[in-house]
Length: 294
Image 1 (cartoon, rainbow, N blue to C red):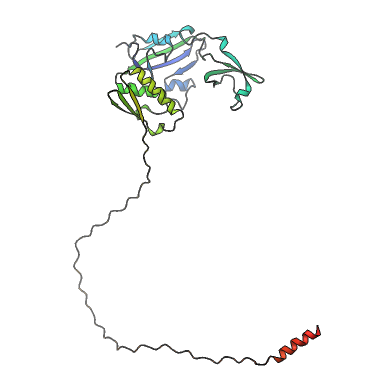
Image 2: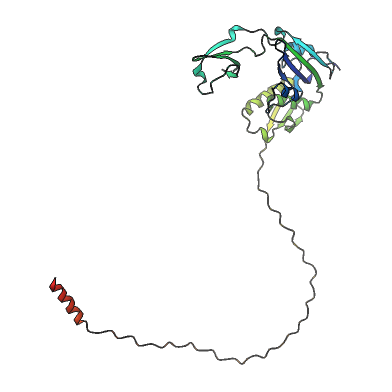
C-alpha cells in the first residue's frame, strides 16, 4: 500500500553530503559506528515522522509519497530542496564575554545562543564568529531511505508522538487510558525529574490535539508510591503435634533429715580499743617552745 501525506510512518535512512561523501546522519547503529557518529545517549532505529509535517526536508517528504513499504530508494536533494542556500546575513560576530559563564567555544562547535542553534566558525581576540545557518545549508544531500511501517493502531501513534517530545524515556513505559474524548497518560517514574518535563507535556498536549481532533481533554497522571524496606521472612513455626505419653520413672524416697532449730546469728565480740595518751602537755610545751625560739 503506497504511503500518502498525513500517514504516521517509521522511516530508516542514511544521509550523506554529495560534495564530500561524508555521512552526517543515520538511523542505523552499525552505520553510525562506522562513520564515527555513534552517541551512547542516542537511540537508533526507524525514525517516526508524520508525512507532510516538515519533520524531514520537504524535498525528501515529497519523494516518499507513493513509495512502497520496505523498498529502499536513493533521493538526491539540491540545496533549495534541502536546507536552503547559505545566507551571509546569518553570520554574526559576538563578543567573547558572552561566553564567560561557559567554556571558551571552539571552531566547528555547535552551540545554542539567544535560544537559536548556531555553529562556531572562528574565535579571535575578544570576538567569536557564529553561523546561524543550518549546518547543511548550501549542501547537496543524498538520502538512502526506506519506509518500514505505516502505523495504524491509535495507541501506537500516540506513544510515538509522546516519544518525539520525551525521547529520554522508552515510549512503551507510558500508559494510556482513553474514554471517548478524554485521554489519561500515565507518566513512568523515570520521567518524573526530567529537566523541562512540564514544557514537554505542554508540547505533547498540543501535538495530540492537533493530530487527534477528537481529543478534548488530556491529563497526565504521576503516581508516587511509598517505598518500604523489605521485611525479613521468618522461618515457619512448627505446629505442635500430638502429645507423647509421659514416660514412667521410678522415684526413690530419701529419708528426711530431722529439722534443726534455726541458727542464731553469731555475736561480735568487742575488742577493747587501744588507750590513747591523755596528757598532751609535752607536745604543747614543745610547740610553745618552738614558737618562742622563732
